[in-house]
Image (tube, rainbow, N blue to C red):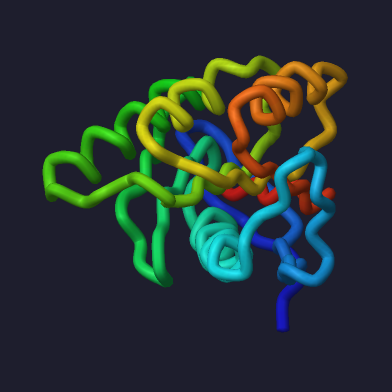
Length: 156
C-alpha cells in the first residue's frame, strides 16, 4: 500500500504522506471539567473519522451516529462551522446535544462559543495551539466537554 500521495496543481504538484492514523475514543484526552457522555464519545469518534477523510479546514457535526452537516473548503474554521450549522438547520436537524469535530486546533474560543450557542455539547480536536487554554476555559465555563486526539489530520 502506498504511504504517500501525489496530486497535480496548476504549475506544480503536491506531495503528502498518507494519514494512516485512526483515532480511537479510548485514546482521547479529556481536557475539560465536563467529560463527554458515552454517547458523545461514540459520536466524537464517528465525527472525527469523517473529518479525517474530508478536505482540510473541515468542521463536522454529528449526533446519535448520524452526520448532521459538515462545513468544508473554507479558509476560516469559523466560516466552516457557520456553514455546517446553516446546513444542519436547513434540514431541520436538532443540534442540541450534537458533537463537533475539527481537523485542526482552535486557537481562539470563537468556534466553541458559536457551537455552544447552537446546542453542541462536546468537541474533539487535535489540540496543540499555544492558546488551547482559551477554548478549554470557554468550554469549562459553559459545561461543554472537549477532548484532544493529539493528531492533526490534514488532507489536501
